[in-house]
Image 1 (cartoon, rainbow, N blue to C red):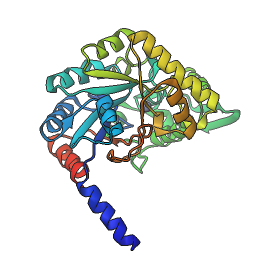
Image 2 (image 1 turned 135 degrees about the horizontal axis):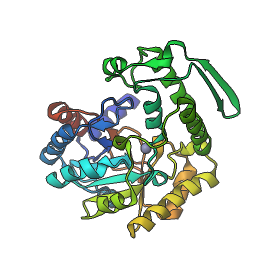
Image 3 (image 1 turned 90 degrees about the vertical axis):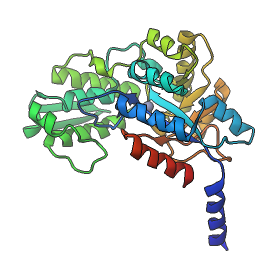
Length: 340
Ligand SMILES: [Zn+2]
């Protein structure tokens, strides 16, 4: 009986109308992309063409309103970006305008105008770009001494950069000692919260003898760019906390600060209400939802990969990650999500 019910549910879902929220981070061309965040401008244009032709692009807010009225618009596709990289304005927006496709950009407010890179990009700059590092690494990780002889990981050549340019963190192999070190430090840093992580990143920069100012290609939006991004009404700005933490690792009071400060900060820059939110790393707790509700948000996007069905929770909207696919693979992928 249960199996029958499940089959009926699947069948119902197969023909039920559902929307899809796409999750992007960057539109740009990078020499290496260890977190698979970038879609090239060429592929992004091709993807927008597919969305125009086979879907019904709509703003997140409009989709949420429809959902609240018990109607999920058929073939609806919503475009979102996380983090707030400057390329969202310079590369993505002109293409969104060309295809008249609306989007929401969730901005990490603490990073706005910073000439330092996001910590994960800083780690890439220190470890996966050509250069020689000191032979011995000593760090204070959350009160624990972390020590390591780098050995062969100490050097990383231009040739290594070229050879491993397609390597990314979702692969299972680590082709060199430098990649092993990168993966290890990424895991250690991910586990730290805001201030602690910043302290370790500062220590790492000094240890590596690297500049604090980051690569222009990895800049976040400035306040002026943020205003330009929202100008025209096609792109809408949402909140993505102050420091991009795992909210589930924070106390209620800390979550409250991260969420409210971000909203206030973005509203002060933009001069209009910011009412949508995306959980950094997809991490949330029931308390996060209560805080968002109280602060006046109307929806929040998670990183749970699914289509948006009629019974979807507006504070836990599923999203699907888009990779750097060209026209045909993207069309196949979109079809799979839309038609099952
Ligand atoms: Zn993010």
